[in-house]
Amino acid sequence: FPVTITYILYKYQKHLFDTEFQDLKNVFSIEMEAIKHIWKAQTEGFILDIPFLKQLEKKYSDKLLSLITDIRKQLSEMPKVKLWNQHNEINKFDIENFNPRSAQQCRVLLYDIFKLPQQKSRGTKGLAVSKNKLLPFVKDYPIIKQILEYRNVSTILNTFVLKVQSCYGEVKETNKVYTNFNSMGAPTGRLSSGSKKVGLPNTQNFPARGEHAIVRQSFLAPEGNLFISGDFVCFLYIS
Image (cartoon, rainbow, N blue to C red; front, side, top):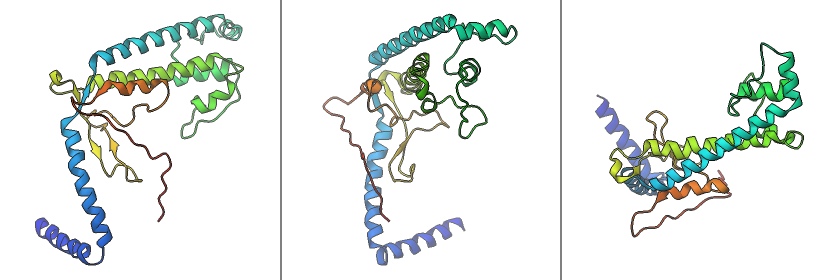
C-alpha cells in the first residue's frame, strides 16, 4: 500500500513538473546535479595536516596557560577581590580555580565583586556574561578583555583544533575527516555541515577572518588540486 501511494504521488508531481511548474523543474534539475558533487565531497572526506594541527594545539594550549596564569595573578592582587574574601569566609572567591568559561564564577566576579550594572541574559534566568554585554566595561576593568580572550582561544582549541582531530578518519592512515552536508539545512538554501548526533564536525564553521583563520590551513587539497572559496557577503531573496 505505501508503495502504491508513493507511486501515485510521484506521477502526480511529475505531471505538475511537466506542465505547470517548468521553472521549478529547472531548479530541481540543478539541485539533483549538485547532490552528486555533495555526495562526492562527503564520501571522499578532507585531508588533514596532522603535524600542523599538533602545532596549533601546542600554541593555543600555551596561550591558555599564559592567560589563566596572568588572570589569576591579577585577581589575587585586586583590592576588591581581597575585600570580598575578607568578608566572605564561607563563600570566598576561589582564585586558584577560577575558570573564565564558568558563567557562575564570572557572575560572582563581575556582579557581586566588581558591582557591574546588572544585565539580564536573554533566554536564561541568570545575569549576562556574554561578550557583547561585557565589552563596554573593558576600559574600567581591563581583566575582562583577558577573560573574553581566554574564552575565544579555548573555543578555537576545543571546537576546532581538538574536535577535528578526534573525528578524523575511520582509517587513520589516510588522515581524513568526514562530515555530512545537508542541502536543506538552512532557510536561505545554503548547505549546512556536521551532525551532533553522530559527532561529525561542522567543517563550514571554521574561522574565515582574523588571527584564528589560520586554523583553516589544517585542511589540505589532494595532490594536483586547489581549494577555492566563495562567500555571499550580501545576499537578498526577493519573493
